[in-house]
Length: 145
Image (cartoon, rainbow, N blue to C red):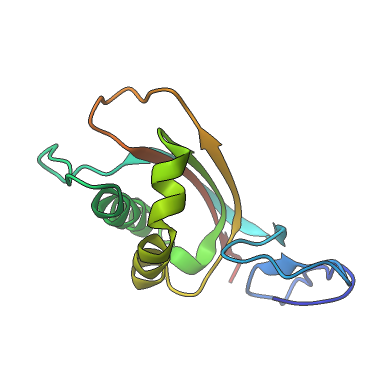
């Protein structure tokens, strides 16, 4: 992550830029903002089921499958995890999320790498699929070539 004033993308710049205002504390596991220019991909709310509609029994297992689902959709659009600029996480149980953070961080880095986009986390009372523990919406921008 960069420190200092916001940088602008030049026409030749080929990557998204993390925005980190000078003097702000360094976020852990997310970015305050990202500036991007290129093809935008919107990934609808993904949940942690596999191609057969089966869910992992636990929160972290569902998160792993969900992130793999996001990566698969990104690939269909010519994108990869490093192109993700924003994620909105919806969890059914905030305590379950908080208790799973160490393992969840490992799974996130395993699937998404050391790339941390702008993120929001929202607790919800339910999701459409009763077995789903979490859902994530994702936006990616593939830089212009």
